[in-house]
Each structure stands twice: as C-alpha cells, then as structure tokens.
Length: 125
View (cartoon, rainbow, N blue to C red):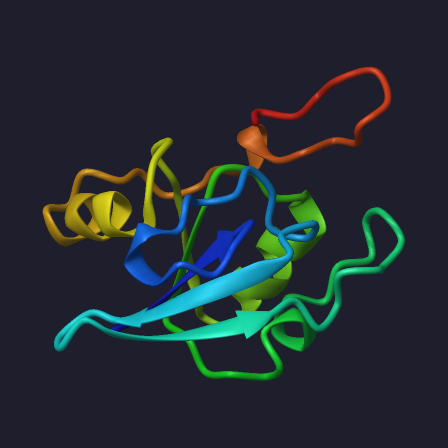
C-alpha cells in the first residue's frame, strides 16, 4: 500500500506530518510493505482556497491512502472519489504515523472534521 503524507520539509521518514493537505510544501509517499519512500514537491501549492486538486498536487502519482492533519471537504471528496482512503494523522513524524496506520490506530477522516476556511475558524487542525 502506498501512503502519502503531506510534509513541510523533505526528511524522509523523519519528516513531520503537515497540518493541512493543500498548503503542504511537499509530500512523502511511503510504500508500506518494504518501507521505501519517494519525496515530491506540491505541484498544486498555489491554488485558490477550496480549489485543491489532490492528484495534481502529487504529480498524478498513484497512491492508496493519505494521512493528514487537516484537509478541505473538496479535497477529501476528490480523494475518496478516486478510491483513496484518508486517515487523520497524529501529531509527529511520518514514521510515527506509519507505525500507527500499520497497527490500525489511525481513524478515517470524516467530513465533519474538514477545513471550512481560514476566516472565522472551522478547521480541525
């Protein structure tokens, strides 16, 4: 299973998981069976709020899941429509979250926790 983690920096498995999918500067994509990973920049970083194109952001790479601290409803629905599972990250590194997802301890991201905008609150991150 290939799992994508939005990150602020590219430090492999030591990268800290970023608090929001669309504004993450980079992504670490981990192939869970063998723990290899790929680091990529966000190809859709400068989009208007609410207009995130998740697969464009990943350079159209194939993934099975995303683990993220926060995400907008549109991006969540687009990922789910592609059959991509979205999990709510725990604060910490990619490695710590890999361990949690492997043990089944990360919850699926629910629509009620999505970002509703950055003016007036509404974000779960």
